[in-house]
Image 1 (tube, rainbow, N blue to C red):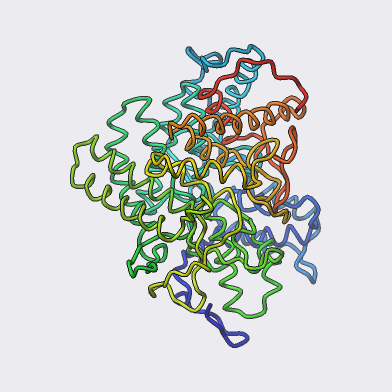
Image 2 (image 1 turned 120 degrees about the vertical axis):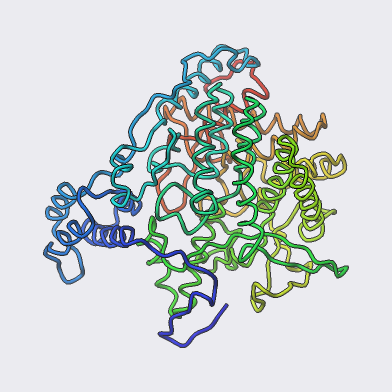
Length: 569
């Protein structure tokens, strides 16, 4: 980490590139700060204020805001601020309009044929019906005046996660699509893919989410998996041809520049692996006041900028936040995500390489197929060398040395593997190059069963109860699905049995929680059946896109023939 004298401002080149902040987003941050000072921290959600939009052009609204009488600490009278917001701003949900999906039917033909129990079939249809509730299209206001909105003007209808998340999110969309495919909603799924391809065409990568303030980072790269799964259901060759150039561009984003790190293993062989690294060194706009408060503990200007980059990079990982990324598990300011080679990210990039090779073969582009097949073999060797622990049957994140720059070759050292147990240690089993190896599948299955992660209601994200939402006791739908599907794809009877056990625990807790709360939740407490999760920097959310998708995918794979009582066992 670059050190500085007190008051010194780091240059952007010290730590990497920075995406410029738009004047609109800067203005929304100012409103967010003023609202916190005016209304106080109780039930305050900073994201609400960067999701607003302007009724008039920015100079007009800005002048009206500047004319509000301010107190010494920068607050205004609550009545004045409320009047300003009503007169000059549109609400956070008004950028999107409800739209009925073109392919939604209340009871799709051939829906979940393996679900034989009528009560479960009825619940599955209720979950299916949530797609209609979560369906939106970008309003004409955004299309006519994009400069007044933080929401980006996507062409096709979307499925939002729900609650405070009123926009498309990148990795959420994979499990939304898996659910839509189970619901036979192929056109809606295809539209989501086309929206994400458009983001790559515009920015060079898929944004964390479809907001102007998310342009500084991406999220776990799963677009190729979306394309593959839609293609396998629809045989849509036009989609494949449109997607392939975008996927190749996205692959370059994750395997070059600041995202690429070279590690020399114990045999002197050099490997290239990827890391999360946001193009940002300021508070995240959607969490501006929270990040500012977190960084108040840091006095050095350069270290403060680096902390902001770590916060944004952790958000890019999807695991925001977890002790997985911290040097000191009780101190969020010790986040060091950019200094970690993550197991799961490299598994996703490896799968992207395999997917691109497959899609290139489908379209007859043999040179691309050969190139990405070769790249996948190289990454597989890198993951075997840097992450895999044969004895423990897990892949472990690798921590880089602080005193090395991104251009340096990092010498592999076994002590740099993070031997703590996280659900991410098992993510590679999802990838065919790993789940086709019987020895690896056996070791990983046994390791997972003895890891302590498997609890009454599913797989916990970690073993550490830190109050962060990507730690114990929270379990998340995407983690359950990836590990379960990897075990199933192995073809091993024993692995499938374990996978089914995990899936049934997850289905049961989702069902029971739904019956008591009348909602699907963003995350669940896996230490006990029938409880939704908590922790983190915002209140628990309902809706919920990826939770719905995973339930439908699990029911499609495993079915359900038994009576499921309202009481967890």
